[in-house]
Length: 86
Image 1 (cartoon, rainbow, N blue to C red):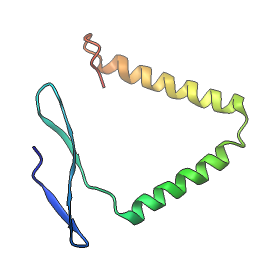
Image 2: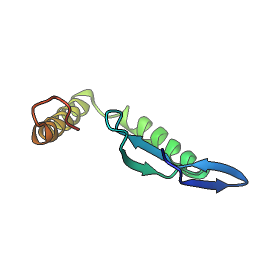
Image 3: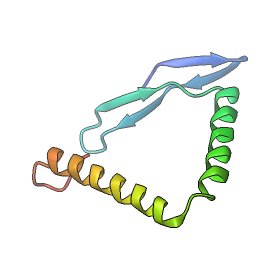
């Protein structure tokens, strides 16, 4: 259980935790984003969407294939053989 708590504008905000369900171990904790940080990230996503939709499909395909190769390398490097890597 994560007991770290934060307060924002009089409201209690709890840290966000990633917990391994098999062991109950807290893997990592994250601080919640402020409303301004969320808005900034959403605006970045909108800008990226409008720019990316003008990119030719063949270019987007190449990018996705490269991303898949990177993920496959990460998976094979971390996989102890039980299929539970990453």
